Image (cartoon, rainbow over all chains, first blue to last red; front, side, top):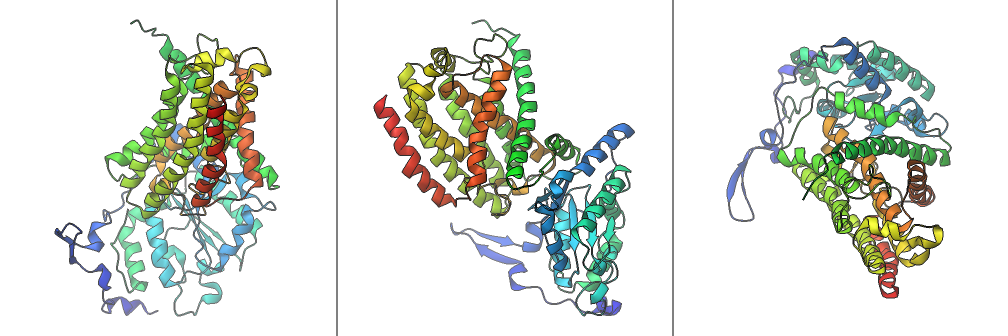
Length: 225
Length: 301
């Protein structure tokens, strides 16, 4: 996908997302603007940690020992996450659990290639997660495209669209590699270096420009929580 | 009317003990369920870490006043349930704020948290939360029927609405327990117990794989932490009622811990054996099997 595609006119907004007058069941008419009404489009802010060092260290320890993964398999690598729940690998004993909603999750595992269509959903899910949040890129295709490097609809470098904390290389990495990657992430969190959410807020414009360069039907607010 | 102010620190002490016991107990039961699946399961202290992490999140968003109040209602339901029934029979310190008609209040408090949750989850505006709440309310209501019948049966049997008096009447060994003297009521109540512990086969409401996690879909950070705190307190509080009404109460903390654990294991063991019911199946199950037993308990007594 050429970078100068960004200059192209956007795809037309879908009918259901256009501003319109709706008649309620009681006959009352009101205006609905789906892209504005249902989302908060306030920009994210950099949130510093606790001022007391020892408290922040304690919090970071708790964060590292309680990784809640968003149950969103973005690509074929998601199949390597399932064995982690089984008796053979049992990631629960390391404090790793799966949550079905982005609100409660604090770790996003981008499992494999990201098509542009999925990237859109990934961005929205990522933005709904609460600070601090972490991203793990699973598989070579999140690093440089991997075997999808010349594909017409997958992104190559995940780091240009979301701040990534840990990459786990391989095609695909085994569940053991995932566990090793999570242990590495824990070390980074405990060291206080996993500040991806703040990085995202700080370089928001850069990330948004990158995202909009590949997502042509941008029919969502720039930021939704 | 005089009020003994020392009751407040005593009640807080009860709360502290029950909170820690609840956090460890729920983790232990999860470990036991994991062992049944040949896993190791979460570490025993995992609940503390999760709680700390959720309180420590840096951002949270709100959807309005009821969204705030939902977890607060939920927690006050659990705490109220705990504090208005005696934890230890015959103990000045741990009889809490129990009074003559506390049985009715306890029945109310069991439902109170769910209603608060319904309002809060409704305001979150997430369709999954709304569907989850309607499913949860239907199931809890159906599960509440046999419990109410059993409680009325027990109240008729002992001619009192005071939990303390009911416990007093059961002292003197297992032959005096309601379990022996009124088994039908206990069976009906235990059926209801299975339905309200949010374990399989009745956990469709909160199951992560269903309508993603149901009512708490939008809840996060300290809101979720409040609800997790309640999830440690509320089951124990409910089992305290069961223990007091049906299993002779407890006169010391070791007996208390043991009886609560064993009551919880009923639900845990059923849970690891049976697959999950859909909501309409579980409602039908309660109406077919549990409610008739409850009616019979009232007729027999």
